[in-house]
Length: 126
Image 1 (spheres, rainbow, N blue to C red):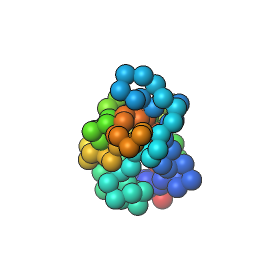
Image 2 (cartoon, one colour):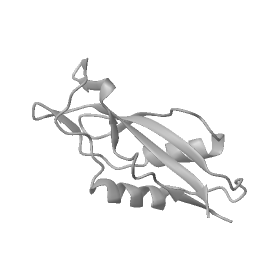
Image 3 (cartoon, rainbow, N blue to C red):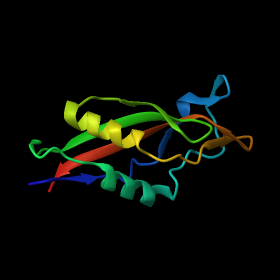
Image 4 (cartoon, rainbow, N blue to C red):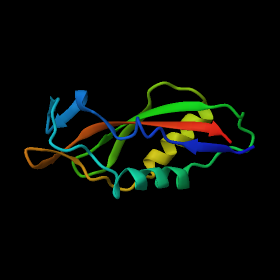
């Protein structure tokens, strides 16, 4: 039975406003949050198209939460797993995030700024 990737729609698009960066200082506010090119539906398609499951993976649900920075130029940096669950799945999720295209960066005062983004991914068997 191959695992199926499901995204929690209620938890997707969760910018972490606690650690917003404006140049060299931390700011808690932003005008707009960082966005994957094409929006949430495009992000879901990207994840489904870029997750490759190990054939010998145990068939049990695993929720992986990834946090990363979207730079003011839209690049992904500092991706990390917040709560490690399964080393293989954690690495698959990190590899997927590192393959992402440039995002539309968050803005503050009309200018692009770096921001952090938290993305939960649910690996669930069929």
